[in-house]
Length: 339
Image (cartoon, one colour):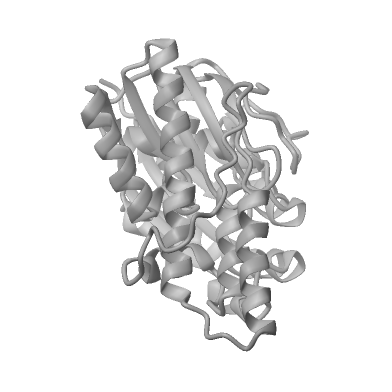
């Protein structure tokens, strides 16, 4: 089988990343320069700072990715780059770099949807995974139930109507005094608390498979504010554990119910929240109980990275997808849109 070597670039938020991926599943290098320490002092990502740091780091991470894979640009068959969704200024840095390389070396350019990249991370982790399957995509900006019909055809079966799961994690974390990013901090702290200490509301939304986490977030914040006004000590571990238990129960329940209804027997996780130990354990247990197969990426492939973009780009490349020099950043790019 001929090797197709993809140089992938990802700059949608606050990670500057480049990777070399062969045939969609073989990662030769995966370089990530994170900006978490910079943004922590502000309690979240500052778009202008993110863009400036991408400009500083982009050439460095591309060079390092090539060196670690023991390749040069002359070895590359195509460039894959995230062009949306994400922060427009951040996306533009990666898109411009990818277009410059594609133009100068006269090699194909493939635009990749960021969420398709997260889903494709599962192809790297599980070499045998093939569509169709149901994927729960949970991150700071998205919570989607996606039916992956084939490698480049997606149907959103459910999505959040307000806060994404990861966004709710960050806001609750801030309220109980945990630094950004809040998701990993709540996950760690929840292991020390009682997951049934508080009966926070579960917005299940009866008409379909959409999610809502705004009410849950508000209930936690209201409790925290009330306790502070009364001068009561906050049981932060119990709050974290109860909040996480509620989020996981909603995500798992909806996913399993949809899989049963549609007769889907393969389930996957994707996105930053897929790194959550409670969600992994809850989904694994539910899949085992129902006889479903379950796939999820390793931790490094859950957060934003370029290897997942290289995997998605490969399958787009195979179907003949090509972008030209008019490729632009699309901050609100819908899932399923094809170039």
